[in-house]
Structures are given as structure tokens and as C-alpha cells.
Image (tube, rainbow, N blue to C red; front, side, top):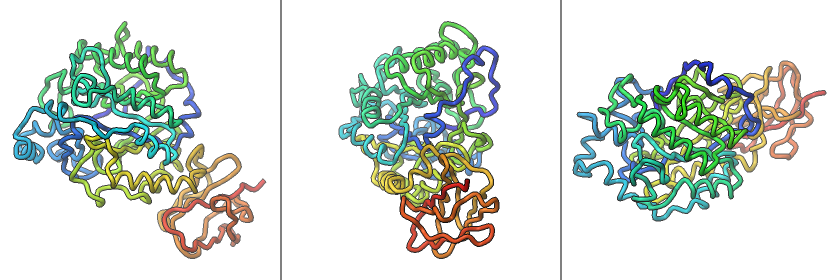
Amino acid sequence: MVMFEKDAVRPAEYRRFERSLPEWYRGAGLGIFVHWGPYSVPAWAEPTGELGAVSREEWYAHNPYAEWYANTIRIEGSPAREHHETVHGGAPYDDFLDQWRAEEFDPDEVLAVVAATGARYFIPTTKHHDGVTLWDAPGTDGRNTVARGPRRDLIDAFADATRRAGLRFGVYYSGGLDWHFSDLPPIDHDGAPAPDDLPYAEYAHDHLVDLVERYRPDILWGDIRWPEAGIAPGPKSLAHAFDVFYDAVPDGVVNDRWGESHWDFRTSEYVHGTAVEVGEAWENTRGIGLSFGHNRNETSEHLLSADDAVRLLVDVVSRGGNLLLNIGLDAAGRIPDLQRQTLEGIAAWTARHGHAVFDARPIEGLSPSDDPWLRWTRSDGTVHAVIEARGPVHLPDPARLLDETTARIAGTPVAATRIGDAILVEMTGAEGPVAISFRVRT
């Protein structure tokens, strides 16, 4: 990812797509992303840091995103290039497509783990920046997973399993970059050339329309931006692709990485682009680790623990957003063990406290805190204090909104005492965040 535009202005020809954000998306709370491609074979990147916390001068040559492997190995002097020469003999990137077998891929098993978290939607990559498509996309001349590597329509497998699991299905598509189609130099600095010509814009348009017609996704999740030649109105413009999408899926949504065109919700990534995290039409995305694609170099110190992920989820929801949390399958098609542990920890938490994040909204008048860690959400006539602490805790309630006699944890009554403008609760034996729910005073 990275390089996406945040200050795009909607031109007149795209204003017809503006409408209210569908309620299913507004209250979703959590979605799960998956990055999977030939880059999952080498599965290598430097775990340098989060996007937004690493200097731009350092980012490209020391990219922590394993899915950028095809770019990073072309940068002179990069550790990825040295690794590629030493371990893989400088082999062509497409050798990894043929080595990628997905021999243990069970889409229903993957989606069972995903659905257990309570996530409401699931989005796999259909084409990342390497240009390899995970379905038999038009114009790819066999450079796809049906003709090579896994020899399977992976998007169809994901779509069917997602819907069997009861989740909404989305598709990620990299419109702003295609290192194979465009044959441009490696990206080693901000502002490097990207494909903007008409042939690529029409090629990408045909992919997007094909994805909609085949899989009827609920979400179109674009990345980087859209080629400039495809923004202007025309039979193969982005506007035409959006027409096809909204006609097929009237309550579908698109994100904001389509250049100067249209979006239903804004996106931030790790700690980058967080200025858009306002209102109730935004989404923060990140990997469980520092990479989106599977990275063999990541250890537990680089990954979110279950408690870390829960705190992030609650914080995002408490401020009005959704969290799109990414897993990177290994080349065989398995969820790596450490990532699975985090997902299973989220599942255990949401089974008990999910009412505090799903179909929940921010609430005004109650302040968050980091010491002790405290966030607030609301749903219907109930307010949820999600807190991580032990011992006696004072929950500030200056407006006296909450009825302390109704305090519950997972439906079980909890002793709570009002002391002036606060409610005292005793957090005994609590480990990790806990949601305490109160009815609002009438």
C-alpha cells in the first residue's frame, strides 16, 4: 500500500454517486483483510516499523511490507535485494508464481477463524502491485492463479466461503500500481512514476467490471489511486465501473483510494493518514504485524497480541470508525500460527464483549483515558465502558448519564457505586479489556 491520496476533490461527474453510508457498513466494527500472492513464497521483508512511523527516506529500500518484495528487490543496495540474490539467486519474480501452490488452502477453514472474531466483512487482494491476478482476469495472458501456481480461481473460493460464513464480501484491487504491466523503474522515493496511460486505465477498468460481474462484491477497495487517463468520463472510465458496481450492488461501498473521483468512506493505514479519522465514515487498516503479506522475519514482538488488537478495535469504534485488520496467508494457504493466535484471542473477547463494538457508536460527554485505559461506546439505550485495569476504578460520569444500578459485565450484574460525578467499580481478576455496560438514565 502507501502512496494513496488523501486530499482528492470529487469532480462533478462523480457527484451522482454520493449518498448516505449504508447502515450495514457503519455498524460493522471489524473487517478482515487478507494479502496473498506470489510474494508469500519468499515471504521476506525487514520489520522496520509501522507506516507513518518510519521516515520516508528510509521506507522504500527498507520496506516492511512483504507484498512489496517485487519492488524492493529492484532497489540497489536494499537488504531485500541482497537477500534475493543470496537465497534465490536473483531469480525472476514470476518464478514465485509457479512455486506458489496453495496446497493446504481450505477457504471454509480460513473463514471459520475469521467469522469467529465477529468480523462483518472480509476482503482478499485480487491483484496487488505485482500485477498477478487471483482469478482468470481478462487480458492477463495466463499470468493469473487459474493458469499458473495454485491453478485455481482463489477469488471465487473466497467469495463462496465468505458468504457461507455469513459475512459481506469485498475485493481489493490495486489500480494505482502494476509493476508488470507498466514496466516502470522501481519506486524508491515519494512521487515516483506510476502508470497513468489509457491502455493501463482500460485494462484496469475491465478487471474491475469483471470482478463486479463475477462476484458481486459488497465493497470495492481500491489502492494507491486510479490512473489519470481513466478518471475522465468515457465507456471505460472509472465512473462507468462505478455505475456497473452500484447497479449490481445498490448498498455497496467504495473506499477513497481512487484518485480524484468518489468515495463512501475514508481510510487510514497504521498511523499514516489519520487526519481522515473523523465522523462515522472511515476505516483504519493495518496488519496484525508490520507487513500485510506474510513475512517470515516477523516474531511476536512485531505482531499485535490479542489484547493489543482488542484495544485497537475498541478505540477505532469509540471514535466512529471500522477496523480492517489484515492477515497474510503463507504460500500453502494457512493462517500463520502467531496471527491465528491473535484472531482466536479477538474471538474469545468478542464472544463475551462484542456488544460493545458491533453496531456500536461513539458517545459524547464521556471522556476516554489512557491511565487507566478506558474507551466508551453506545448502542441503543446502553453505554459501554471498555476498561483495562485492576482494583477500584472511578468511571467519570460528569453529566450523570449512567444508571449505576444497571451495571453489567456480559449480562452479569456488577456492584457499582456512585461517588459524585463518577461511578466506582471494583475490577477484580480482570485481565485485558473488559466491557461494563450501563443503561442510560431516563
